Length: 271
Image 1 (tube, helix red, strand yellow):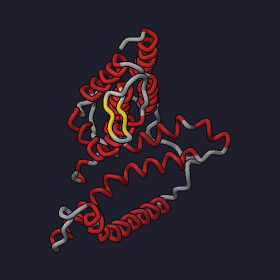
Image 2: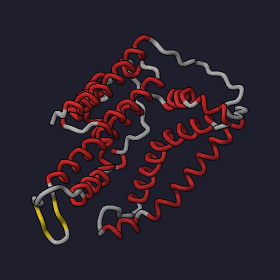
Image 3: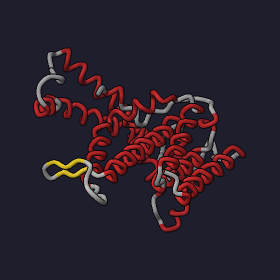
């Protein structure tokens, strides 16, 4: 897996319908989508969620290639989760396969398949959110939605700012890591041969310059914020205020319909 395959935190500018949605609407739509995914109990429910995700990917012009590319770093986690559900889900009757201490039941195969699809679509929907929403607008949306927590003295603005900076730093650190690896490869370093332990040891020389670079960027960011008299969210104004439009209300209505549709398919008992 190449570092360029890690696309979390990247933003692809555009003027599509999904790009023009209010960031608060997109956050709520992702929440609706997650609720629908975790309540789906049959193939029809997952097919409905997959269709909605496909429509979002096509309409935003992000494309399936970018979504699948973002999934590459988590393929090991997906495979591990599927294997655990496959071998540790106990069903009724005789197992389909039995060897040593492992038993594979039809329920295990079904659970592993659904869990794999669920996590894949969950990650893809999150990627679609970050691909079509700039970190600044995402910060404003999080702060606005969590605004009621300010009444109990929760530092909402600071939390939203931390999340935004973390998302922004991911592609920067990946780019910095790629530069350091290229520089060390030019000096004869080898990161691609040997067993897993040898490869892990070869990565140790990357950590020191990477941490130094990360702390330097953090210090520069802190200095820049202090020079601009940043003091948190108290008394701050926004140059662009968030405002719902008709398309946002219609999108939220469609998100609610998705949840209700999945609930209905569960009640109907469709396979």
